[in-house]
Length: 243
Ligand SMILES: CC(C)(COP(=O)(O)OP(=O)(O)OC[C@H]1O[C@@H](n2cnc3c(N)ncnc32)[C@H](O)[C@@H]1OP(=O)(O)O)[C@@H](O)C(=O)NCCC(=O)NCCS
Image (cartoon, rainbow, N blue to C red; front, side, top):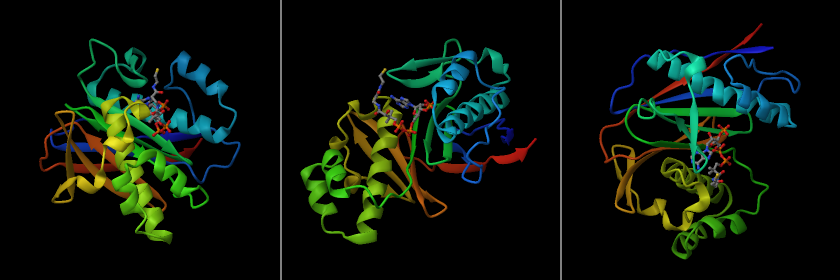
């Protein structure tokens, strides 16, 4: 059994985004992350995953979530209840506005973003050069964006595609709509950038976007529903303990 050593987060400043990252790539196929922080419903869901890797990513995401909310708020783990608004998990009342968070996972890398006051969205993907980039690009990019994307080729095009994808999906997850909102309506080429923080206005709301790459293979982005400001990001790595 694998135990995650999850950093304690006691305070998050208004201009701070905390991102907790678990890298599960070194786990052997049959090794499972410990589940003691999960609720009965979450454990039921765990049992429905066929692949150990999917199980582990789900367990890690929810364990990080519950552990950080507990250290941040002192709410006992067993009292942390989630509601799902159009699928987006958030704290149930009366704790709803205590902290905002969002989870993402891709190919054994899990990230959970937290902000004390504003809705947040996060997306990580692993580069995959085997997908039909042009076909997928057409489904998420407007004609104008697609024409720009077509100027690139090879590795540059792959990088541009994923930078575009994670930026769009982090905003869709921040909004809480997921892909029910048309990703073609978000054009990262038109983001306004200042001090490494990108900003856009969408449906009369402001969003900021920060884009990164984890371990060269995993482009990721985090968005906060906020006016542009001097945001800082604090990344914490989860360490893995073998019990
Ligand atoms: C939300 C969505 C973008 C996530 O895509 P994904 O490929 O599963 O990607 P990620 O790994 O980045 O995100 C998964 C996590 O996002 C969170 N999530 C689920 N729905 C969400 C939403 N609408 N908005 C924000 N976050 C959401 C969950 O925490 C989930 O992880 P968990 O189930 O392990 O807790 C995608 O599922 C989507 O667009 N869905 C359409 C909206 C939808 O299905 N709504 C449900 C109506 S009931």
